[in-house]
Length: 419
Image (cartoon, rainbow, N blue to C red; front, side):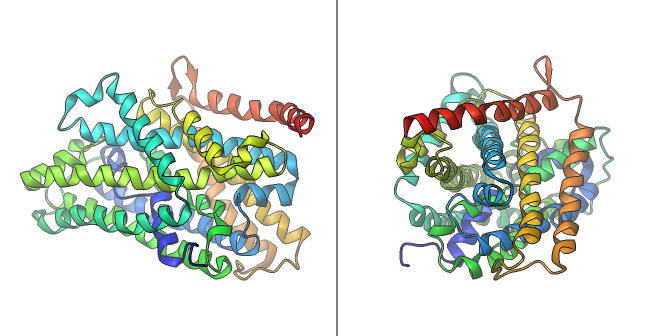
């Protein structure tokens, strides 16, 4: 038990898997203005984060298996859909793990503009990723414990910003015509609750710990976003001043000496997020290898970590807005499968022991699934014209998903023949 994650380390690790601090939310304020941005940040937890957290709480407490959401979908819908869940999640992770270091580079560029140009804009994120891969080789306990320390460090400068910002009243700011791009940013900043499930066998008393973790983490993430943004809004800074990586310059505007601590905080936060997500994502190939749906060598955790680190370098050169949209589209498809698993298991395995259970029976499970799935469809429709080069983001995400459908029989055959 002493080498397993308790409540506080798991809350801290989940906080980093989902958020890691208020950076990354800047585009929402720029696109929507303060009032709508804050309203969105208060609404998204209710219609997106909390339902997902409740789903994770029930399934993780009922099936506390290494591999988490992959295992849930495989058990409920069969190995084919389990493979698709893993495929979509790992594909989304390519863009997810590119986003955090990209935000750090944008922030660093506020003080060192050279960081925004090649080769630094690719080399710096790659160094962050492989440093966290090495850190994860020390085990889940090391990652969870470090997340507590990193979480405390990152909150201090933003707390100082909130306290030191002058209060001049909320500035008048309109809503940008592309406000729906801000919706994607908000969804991305409340995304990843299920990632905590993949290390269930490394958690103390998971049946009790997971539901409590979800509730505490949802509340913590919401407050960490809303309080600093509200403070900056009341200081009189116009919404047009916000852009990706702008926290450094905003801090310098409040007190010049705050810029460097905020930049250092973003470095800490990026490391914490990438570190926690590396722990989560690396367990998916591990679980797949045990099911003979991935090469056998990935059954070794260190090899799984190195494999994930390698694929995460593929999207480092993309712009942040493209990264976020592709991440949401692919992650959204995997999340729909997870809600499907929740409902199917309620029907097929009504006697499954569920230490934490969403009230309302099967109808309750269906009810909490509606809002997140509807929000995903809305985000995809509103952003359907976004392009990645000459290809629409939706078509590219669809192509990646289709590749998973065709890869399943090939991977299954190859893995079976090599065993």
